[in-house]
Length: 166
Image (tube, rainbow, N blue to C red; front, side):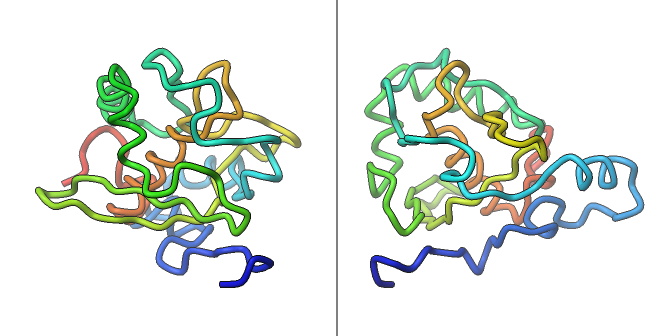
């Protein structure tokens, strides 16, 4: 990939399958979310975004549209020791090509994940509510990236809702 190419994750592309997975398209929640959400690159929604802008703190975590409170609680516990959150990221800066790299423990094994910078956001123009984003620190991306990585491991955001991931 050259410096002018923007990364697109072929294994977790911005689309319905990554949002809804096996959710049946006739379900009311599917229809509602499809109308409310759109995939956008972080750079289109949040200006001057960084992984750890203004530091890492457990109180910076805010749950978005998806029912991932169990995951956010675990991230909050890890954030008590900020270096533990930093250590999950293979690259500590947002790169020009739009690639995030992190490692998560999944079923007893560390998995390295590479993600593009597309995030599901509300359709409203210029909204800064990125699902899983830090409260009051809209340019801080570590929570949203880790939530997306968790969704990628399970195949969709829908699959990680409510803590029923297995």
